[in-house]
Amino acid sequence: MPRPARGLQAAAPVRLPGRAAAGTRRQGAQARAAGAAVVTAELQVGARLDRLPGWPFSRAVFAVLGAGFFCAYFDITNIGSALPKALEQFHAPVGSAGTVVGLGLWGYVAGAVLNSVLADRWGRRPGLMTATLLFGLGSLASALSPGITTLTVARFVSGMGIGAALSVVSTYLSEVAPARRRGRYMSWVTLPALLGNSAVPWFALWLVPSYSWGWRLMLAIPALAMVAFAFGFRVIPESPRWQAARGREERALRAVADAEQRVRARTGLELPEPVPARPVPVASGWRAWLTLVRPPHLKWTVLFFTIFFCVYFSAYSFTGLGITLLTQHGLSLTKSISLTLGSSFGGLIGAALAPLIADRWPRKVPAAATTILLAADMIVLGVHPGNALFAAGYFLLSFQLGIFAPMVYLLTAEHFPTQVRNAGVAITDGAGHAGGAIGPAVTLAVFQAGGFGATWLTLGLIFLLASLLLLLARNTTGVALEKASGGELAAARSAVVD
Image 1 (cartoon, rainbow, N blue to C red):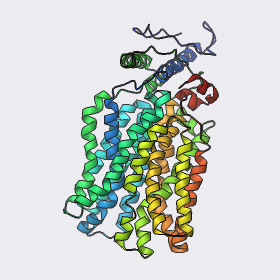
Image 2 (image 1 turned 45 degrees about the horizontal axis):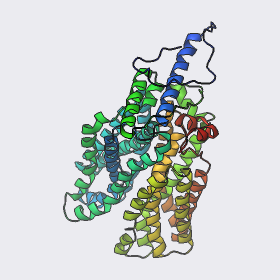
Image 3 (image 1 turned 60 degrees about the horizontal axis):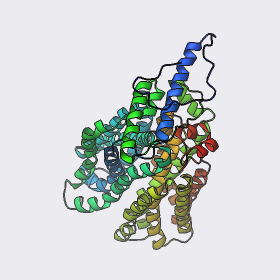
């Protein structure tokens, strides 16, 4: 049995069921003991983090991650406002806009998957740094582009960073936040993201029409994330769960002991005894990746990939083509744009509501409910088109994002074990952006074949499918992360008390 790390004698020992009898002489005993030590350390770290009554690290972590998420979401939507002027100055055909946007979305897929290898193998902090550098440098390159080809490549690089950031931030928060408050803390980090999303129309209205370089500044703003991360990187600790899973038990236990001391100092309370999960088989290296396409995790990989694919398919089609479809339907451009203004407020309302409900109900319930509301509006819009329904649709789309983003990003991370958690989020959410990449082209084909009503009916039915699939996910609210990803839900809920 491995000896405990020095300097941690005050930490309560954790007894784990099913440990192999000490002193066994069978061949391979030492290798099995080493593997058991890693599992034991990971479970001990997880149990001690999950029992904490508050945030265990510096609150500056929220500021740094929030600033990064603000810039990432600003970068997601700023291209739509910048492209018309960019195409005009580059004398590029309108059709090249689809290539710029589409390649950026494929960048989400590539960045999420590639960065997950780094984050699962070398750490969450390097994964956060790489994601920030990618979309920061991609934003600068976009702003300085001399032509449409350079802009297209730069948007692919920027997209890689955004896809990587969405995956690694969700993974990181799920691992360092205590079980009873994971949803609230994820919502707090996501709130600046929705502020960034809502700020784009106002910045665009100010900059793009008034200045010839305004579109370039719009594309450069997300590069500020690199500045925030350069100053704030030192306050972000490595995930103790990841450290323990990678065999760095002493560092992980030292980080947890420091976190416990910080929480005691803030609250003045003694901490309850940790309640660990039962050990489960742990794969390593590339074998760990194979667990994502094998039972029991295969069903969650397929489920969440399908959910994200459907949501991104309809959402990117709606936001990317909505105004175009309205003008084709006979509305003026000014009237069409005015019907989208509700999106500036819906996201903020949803993001403000999310922290209040994230840990009260199963996360899948509010996410599914808001998606059903959006689906219903679009289905009715397909049957009885009207300006009020279209305005409501834009409001509901951003409101749904305010609830869906923190709930489902976190819910996805909670379904996968530490060794491949970032990879699981990358394959589901990151690769799910393929739906956003192909959605507009398919939607245009539906519009040309079936008309205005058929288009909205199709998008609404796809949203409805995503909402129903969400209900198949586990209830992970308030559940220890190791138990949520390992399936011991009944025991977990009785162990974590509000």
